[in-house]
Length: 233
Ligand code: FE
Image (cartoon, rainbow, N blue to C red; front, top):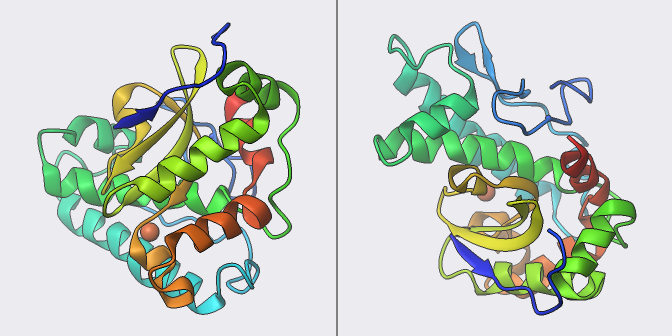
């Protein structure tokens, strides 16, 4: 996990909500991707496949959600069936398999990361966060724009496949990036929002232009309400 250091003063430091949607991220919370009849369930997309156009095409969402994300769900379920992992929550599987069972960790964490990613965006998103979230961004990075730019940079510069995150660590807001399936949960952080920077997230629409994809997400899709709900949970 690589952390982007705040440049400004550093003074301070999901449950079932949407019908099957928004979530509490406290460990042990009931997550919509949690176990159901022993299986991990892929939450429904929070919007239609074409809702993120023109910034992310329906074709990309169709493959990303219907092939990549679903693939991680299927592999996790096939692997845990008939084992003591069956019936555990997704968070329990992630934390329990971390550094012990790479195959299970990678697939389960990718399920969780994608559950979180779809909710990190919405049609008509972007704009500016408000309230406590904005205050914490200012406290950690000097300004909201500086915090947003730090997330853009961390996501853009992540080498290879991975994720950019806004998270809470020890009571203060941080920007981190992670490689492959890693996420802030394993470092005892509370994730607020994420950007998937695996090539499958953007290649059909942007080819190698990861920066254009990130800009589209940050300016037009990012769901600050979701981040604020996670902060408050
Ligand atoms: Fe992905």
